[in-house]
Structure formats: structure tokens, C-alpha cells
Image: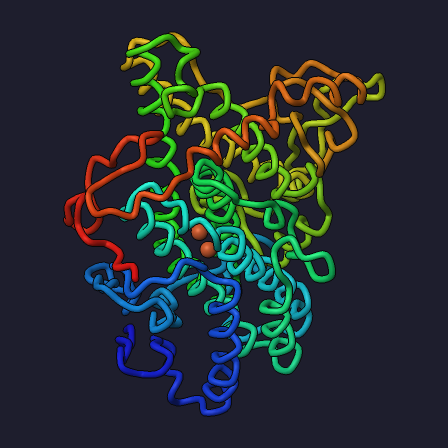
Length: 473
Ligand SMILES: [Fe+2]
Ligand SMILES: [Fe+2]
């Protein structure tokens, strides 16, 4: 049974918050700090109201409410997917046992760390995207940006709830730290590299929501398998919202490629930039950058920590229940990427347990391939021969086996010198970024759209593209 949320409560929730006065007070004292973080680090474009989706329940039907709301009055709530009384731990040494409703003492610090690292990414992306509103290509896109932002804010709430409810004083301190660290800060940066990069323009935003939010989807997928049931249920519900973030990225890149392809088909390919479009090779460079920094988020090819998390039941595999093996992996092996002794890119065999980062990264890569296929269909449909592609897994990597080497997008080894001279062929240069930024002129007029991107096929929640999604001042 799901308790349906009282939408008028201060903190909408389906966790019976009113029954736990201590927890309620802890969250109520964190809330003003969250709001002042939102005011100073959240969207910088002033708006009257925005047509937003708000989570109000977790049921299959009607889990969200759509309507115009002032963003500071957005009701960030706490929602866990319904509890499955028949659920059993699906992997590791506790496989088959009932899941944990409380944090086991022996796994306390590991679980807390996993939640903090996940929680840190949520406000980070809001910070990275804070100035994009000023250059939105349409009110539809502006609304989608803000939707992603408020939901990342809610994901922060989701992690803070777990910290407050299950990790005592240390959890409350970590919840404060999540508001204290900031993306790109010198003194207190966000924990993971990709979340300290800038998102200065809308091409970066779409690439980020395609590639980096997708990393988030895979991380949440592994935490959804967790033996710690409140974490599992929290992540399950977050994945529901995450689907829209994927949609924003996928269709955003679709529309950029579509517009570029149109301009290329109509005119000489070289004329695209002069005609207000983004050249395909610049799209490819942005893709190369966002894909490679997102690959780094999966960590090293091998990890004994992650092996231990798996064995303990803290973090599973993507779609664990669909794997056809013993779900303990004690006698399995896996080939992982490696640089061989003679300096060549190759593979090496490791115990499957220590190769779990590689397993997850491969699932992610296969998913990314599907995006490239759809963008290439758009190019083919416009009668063009050029294609986009994912760069080699060793390209521009700063974490893991390839951190110390440089390769071309085709995987050919380069010396540090060659890389220094040639990286501008494959990664956005100042010239590329300046051109992209020059196109970022706001189109805040209802029903209008910037010239560098095609309009969407459909609006949001059955509304037309020219709906008044955002009321500006
Ligand atoms: Fe998120
Ligand atoms: Fe997201």
C-alpha cells in the first residue's frame, strides 16, 4: 500500500513524515538552506511561473501534476516507489534474504558514501545549467530546462531524506555539505569531474542531458538493486523522472542535427555556420567531449571497492534480474580494457567481480550507440553521406586504464605532443565554442524558435509547441 501524499503539507511525501517528528524537524531545518541554495545557485533567469510537472504520488497512473508554478514555490517532495513485500535481495552473499529496512552497522559508511556521491551530482547539474535560461532557443526548451532543474533539486531531496532518516548526525552533516560544495568551485568542488565542467551553451546542455544524465540513469539502476530497501525504492522513483531528462537530451540533439542537415542539404556544407547553423563537425566534437568525460564517471576498469559493494548487496548490476548467471560471480571472469606491457590497447582477463565498472560502462556504451543511430538516420533521411559516431573508448580519458595515454577517435595512439597539437581536430576549440555561443541568442517569444535548432514534433503534456510554457517578467 502506498500512502498518497498530502499535497498541502510543507514537504509533500509518501513516507509518513508526520509520524516521525524528529525527522520532520531535521528536514524542515534543512529546507531553508536548500531554498537559499536554489535562490543563489539555481536558475538565474527571473520568471513569474513555469509549466512544470510536480511529483505528487508514485502510482502507475497520475503520479505527476502539471501546472504553472512560481519556481521558488515548487513543491520538492519525498517519494519512494511502493514497497514490494515479496522482494528478496537479488545478488551477492545475502541473495535470497529479505531486503534491509534499516542500515546494517557493518555497511554504514559504504552506504553513506554511495548516497553522498549520488546526491552530490544532483545539485551540481543545476549549478552547471544555471545561466542557460538567458539564451533559451524557445519557451518550450526553457520549460524543459527548468523541469530538469527542479527534478534534480528533488533528487537532492531524495538523497537528503535517506541521509537524515538513516544516518544520524553524520548524515545531517553530509546533507549540509551537499549544499556547501559547488560545481567548479576552487575550495569545495563537486565530487566527480564531469560535474565541475561548464555547461555554457545549449548544445552542451543537450549533450549533457544525453550523455551525463544517462550515466546517472545507469548509476541509479545499480542502486535500485540495493539490498537497502529505502535506497532501492528511492532510486526506482527517481528513474521515472530521469526518463524525461533523457528525452530532453535525445530529442534536443535530434533537433540540432535535423536543422544542420536541412541547411547542409539546402546549401553547400561549408555554409552551415554562415547560415546560422551548427556545423556537423562541431556537433561531433561536442559529442566526443561529453561522451568521454561521461565514460570517466564509471571509474576504473577494475575496482575492489565495487566488488565488495556487490558481494555485500549494496550495489548491483544494470538489470540484475535479467542476468543469466549465479548473481554472486565468485567464479566468473571478464575481459576488461587495458594498456598492454608493450603500450598497445588490448584487454586483460580479471575476476568478474572486480570488473563490474567495466560491465556497467559497456551497458552504457551500447545505450549511447542507439542515440548515434537515430541521429544518423536523420542525416541519411536528408540525403547526406556524413555520419556521427562515438569515439574510441580510450579517447580523452582521464580515469582508468587509458588515463595515461592519448588516442585519436579511431583509437590510434598519439604521443603527448601529437595530442597537444591535434586535439582541436576532435574536441571543441575556442573558435568552435565562440561560434556556438554566438548563436545562443534568446528566443523568449511564444511559438518562435532559434534558427540553429528545429522545432520539436510535439509539445509537453499534450500542449502545442506555441503554448505559453513560461511567463517571464
Ligand atoms: Fe538526477
Ligand atoms: Fe537527471
